[in-house]
Length: 147
Ligand SMILES: [Zn+2]
Image 1 (cartoon, helix red, strand yellow):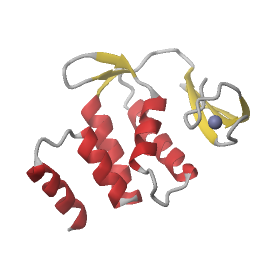
Image 2: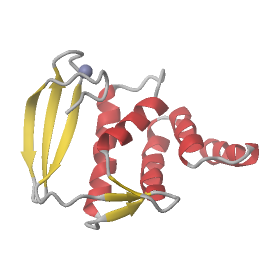
Image 3: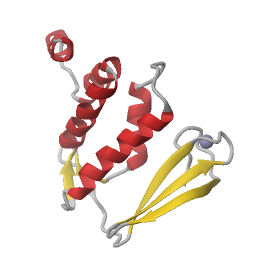
Image 4: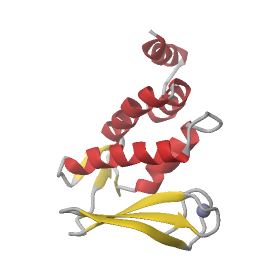
């Protein structure tokens, strides 16, 4: 289990919570001391993300977290808030109870959260995730946030 912030391999578990389908562990990186959460499926039922081009890959929480960290770069947003929002998004994804989910839908869940957290982060994420094709799309995205 690699630390999503500094990629260090060692962590200690600070908290563990079981639910019906998931084991959630709070971990603290032994190097950078930042905290993050890992999930383990009790039933080991993998969740697949269906990409726009039809490819499937196993849902990866770290990827989601990295996406949010990138979007929130240099904004005044704490790691706790980013973590909290990743938890909310992952809960939403997993609570659907289906074995696959379209990547667009994860993107939508993420944007719904970022819109509430930070408008700049939202626009950054949207511009990458939604793959804005031209300037007009981008303007529309900005309008949506500003108005
Ligand atoms: Zn670390």
